[in-house]
Image (cartoon, rainbow, N blue to C red; front, side, top):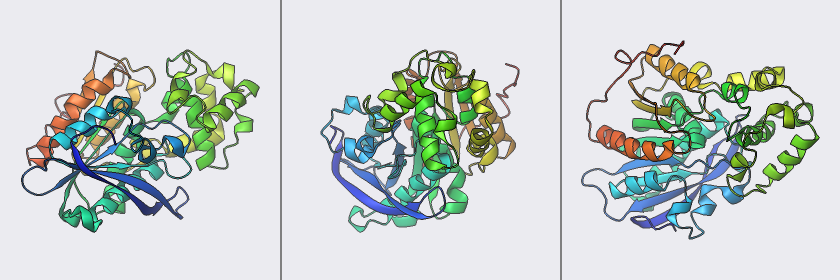
Length: 353
């Protein structure tokens, strides 16, 4: 197990809900702090940015391999939670089919992972009265914002005190439309493979050219390593790997457009009832800032108490370090019962910015 201030760890196999509503299972890793915080126990559910398409890269597998903490993208977030004395749940939110970026699936699997931890007797948690926080960056932002959105209807018994999401992949259609020449273009190719798994009506043969099909085959077995597919096509373009000329024309392809529309968190998901913190840099190479602005406006308009940090420095990769400093402080304040700062009235975002 990675070298964090953890005294014990469990891995729980639990029942959850697949994309089509059928029953499925996945795994959560539960880490207990060496020095629990005073007072009632608290849980942080950390969604590691897996960004991969096989279970060989699932958190439950990587966390058992004695990898140094530096090899885990969320090392600062998990370490901070344990150092604060909180229990940490790390779900395999992509499920047994490794369905990356499928928000409704990942949100439910995250919520059920928290339920599994709360109901695991040896952990001696306080059951449904345990305060919970949910956090995730980049690929981990998707299960985080969808879990927050679904909590009231899918898991109303959970006491979610706060939500923190950074590098927020709120609208995949916008990401696809602006993908050309991105340093992280490979993430779009990973997404196409994943969406075709989750939604059988999407046929990759209708989207990918021969070169793209070769890349998809490698990605499907994580041939470039865990998360390696994100970086393997830096500067690539849609016309190089698909039968479409631009990202916009690809995102407008009717079967894909319908799926992407259903995965738009600003329009297709309920607004969270829990207090939320959003972080994104304006210069993000893959997440278009306009989509995060739209999510923020949507939350504000629908009554979520939200704090938005819209940074003019850094990019998608460096942003994880900034987020890992800000998110733990936000969560600690929510666990302490402090009033959450709201920026909806003081920081309106003009769509023309």
